[in-house]
Length: 231
Image 1 (cartoon, rainbow, N blue to C red):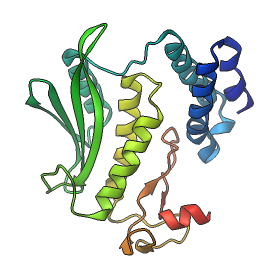
Image 2: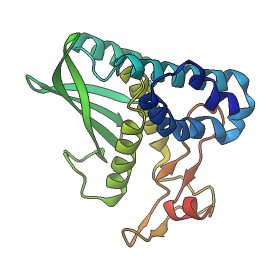
Image 3: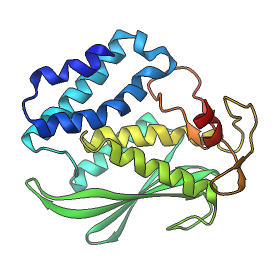
């Protein structure tokens, strides 16, 4: 973890980039601390490389925010190969808007809204919002708190890693989303219960936070928000 935080700084000059690096470091720590991943040198090195590359892109102004139509299609093909249990569909809502829908059949779906923008590479599509709702809802928003809370978390995660390439961000958000296949059966890793009164909504909710350690090969943990804060 010491190398994770110190190594990228050796190559940086800009104070602005140092500030951004400080903002991203806590997220990378979450990716590496959980599940004793910090004891695995190869995974630590991978996170260092990711953070280092992100900092370099920020230094030269290359944020990797958008994808061309063909690049988006290629990423969807790669995601389908990596997550055969998920359904992926892309819709052309208008000439300048695309919708990427990722589904865990019968359980949940995530809708990523992409807007077309002008860039140095021509016309690209950027993700500007993420919505989550049940598998049988049409959206754009869910009428259930369960899915609205997951949508809130997915937007936080997406924009927290804004310095990484969009390919990297898509891979991470889809991998995190795939952890909700047990949304209606998982028990909390702290209290061992499925439902708990959520103080923010005054409703009984299942554990909606999934362990951010998406690099672990072990079982992923689920938490109620209240139990996670208490822990």
